[in-house]
Amino acid sequence: MSNIRTAAQWVSEAQSVVVLSGAGMSAQSGVPTFRDAQTGLWQRYAPEQLATEEAFRDNPAMVWTWYVWRAMLVNSVAPNAGHQAIGSWQEHLLAYGGSLTVATQNVDNLHERGGASEVLHLHGSLQNYRCIDCGRSAAFDPASSGMRADKTFDEDQALEPVACTYCAVGMLRPGVVWFGETLPQDAFHAAVDALHEADLVVVVGTSGLVQPAASLPSIGRDAGAKIIEINPVPTELSEVADLHFAATAAVILPDMLSDVVS
Ligand code: BV8
Image (tube, rainbow, N blue to C red):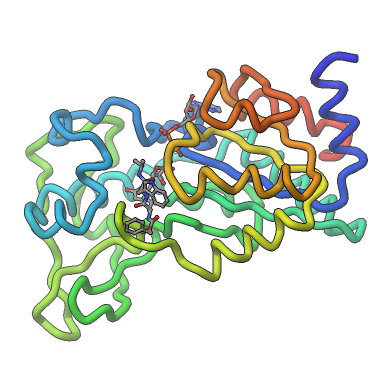
């Protein structure tokens, strides 16, 4: 039986599914993956160097501009066929007493805009902002910055950080998890709990380099779930997978799910 037929068979039998996604899930929507070469202002930095509190405190204007540009880009693109297939699959399972949990490393909202609900954001979200000093949540609309949502970045768009209107001391920071910061424990433990009950885990669009998220697929395997990986290239996680599709999310997910989603 072909791999796609095997996967479709597993999909038809699955009642408790977990989808673990990374930046590759959003690539075909036009959002650069996390380790794609940085453009413009950030060309000389690895993302790991920018996505830290230290980088923000050292150069708040540069890091703040990076996040506002990413938020504007996400708001200007659309969920792809892979996001939509996952949203429809979740709806199908819920209608028949099953469950599908999406646990994503992505800070965009494309799973939700593709129809998925109760999405677990292991690394936070670009939709939320808070004061880096007093911690108070703050409403911030990236469009208010006047920045263009271009696919690449022009340095003339550099922004000044936004001051907290509550304490008037701190600056607003994005509600993402920076390197060296702990993951939101409620989201992480909800993902672990779902993996303990899973009979099928689909790992899509992640290089498997960032911990502790990269350890999650093994929890599913140890709990007896079948593991499917979707990634154009082999990754750190490929040895955990029962099936690896060297393919892209927006192509293979609709194909694999064609029997269960309209
Ligand atoms: C923490 C938000 C406790 C910000 C991000 C062991 C245990 C615990 C921690 C560590 C550890 N070892 C090291 C650490 C430290 C660190 C870490 O993992 N470092 C790495 C670099 C080694 N981890 C942490 O700091 C975490 N915190 O553990 O707290 C602690 C505290 C102090 C000290 C120790 C421990 C916090 C990690 C979260 C960081 N924040 N994002 C932001 O976005 O700006 S991580 C960032 O990486 C994004 O969330 C991204 O999603 C994520 C993972 O990357 P991927 O999603 O995999 O993306 P990538 O570009 O790498 O790969 C894309 C893949 O898609 C590729 O494979 C490509 O082939 C594929 N692809 C491309 N196109 C497609 C496709 N696939 C399908 N279809 C396509 N079309």
